[in-house]
Amino acid sequence: MSPARFLWPLLLSGASSAQILLPLDSRPATSTLPARMAGLRGGAPHLPPAEMLGNATRGADPVALSGWLAAQPTDRPLVVALDALAYGGLVQSRSSPLSAAQALARLQPVRDWQARTRQPVFAFITLPREPDATDRARNLAVVKAMIEWARAGVFRELHVTWDDALPGSPAPLEGAALAKDAPANVRVYPGADEVLSLLSARALSPELRTVRAVYSDPVAAQGVVKYEGIPLTRSTENHAAAAGYEVVDAGSGPADLTLFVYNGGDTRQAALKISALLRRGPVAVADVAAVNLGNTRLWGDLQTLRQSANLRALAAWGTPGNNLGTALAHAKLAEGADPVRQDELLAREYANDVIYSAQLRAALRKEVPEARLNTPEGQAALLRLAQAAFPLRVGQLYTLRDASLPWGRSFEWQFELQPEP
Image (tube, rainbow, N blue to C red; front, side, top):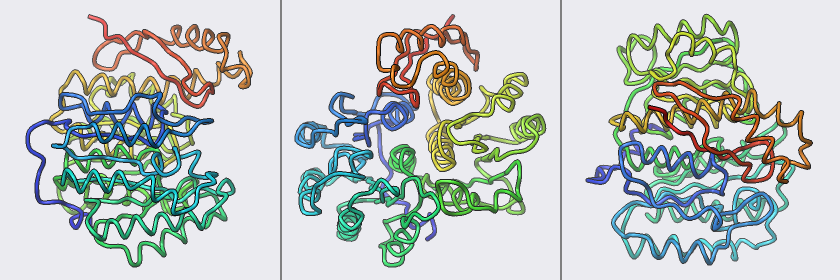
């Protein structure tokens, strides 16, 4: 389906970050990051408190979330992760004992909110990963019901995404079957943690833009990528369309954005290529060569060339889809961004995706066993190790003010940077 079919004609007027975000769960990547992107042009989106959202062991309270939603302003769009309401979060969507009817009842407040406010709703729901899913038939029935809600106009856009599709997962086939009869306002593709950011870009920056993808290894980009079940090039196209970009080829003239996808090869040459592309126009970088791990040589070379601050976006924190979607969503929202907020977000992305994922996480695991991270010992070790990795210069110089492990594990951290004069 062409991304042009997803453009809605009424552009949002006035407040640049005037939207309501109901995240997938309380992880920084699914809550803090989308909110900071949504605030790039000023203001702050409405976001429920972290304690109201789900975590690894406890699902969100649907009654509390429904009450929070009912109390939100009625003059702005809603961007919502439906799994948070239906099951309590992404983790709980895989093993919830609820029936399809019970899950749908938990989703009714979204439909009621849209009927009452007449504001656009941008929503997504996931097809769960294998082998964790305990009731695929239930999840699939709820997804099909959401597609019918989209057909009826409840959602301005609905994105149906599949989570971590390793070989043998039925999710890609389920997604393909759903896409065959989906209405024009439904998009189906692999993804999860990055989707709220993509939908935020759709809500706040609905104008169609063009993007050209450049791969460090074009041949390898044709291969099926881990966790997606599809070629890397197709994943790029999916995420570009989800953010509101049309992918163009090299012979079609200038593009609004170049997405450089580092998928392996000589890091120095990749950094020089990015530097050359920046002289021609806006560039975002998605580092997908490894999962959950930024390439320190690539990013070190870019720092040496003093180019990190010139990027529209950077992403290296998760799966290939996570990184593609994050980079494209940020780049779309960076158009017209406040320069101070843009530099701060780039610094946060670098601190998380490169410094933490590629350096601090390994050092922390070496010093404190994973089972003991959710203790004062683990938190203290994190803060000590993290403070030694700063300051960081992107455009501005940043020091680390605080750091913690919100889920008590090493996969993600929460942190605050302090810009220095």
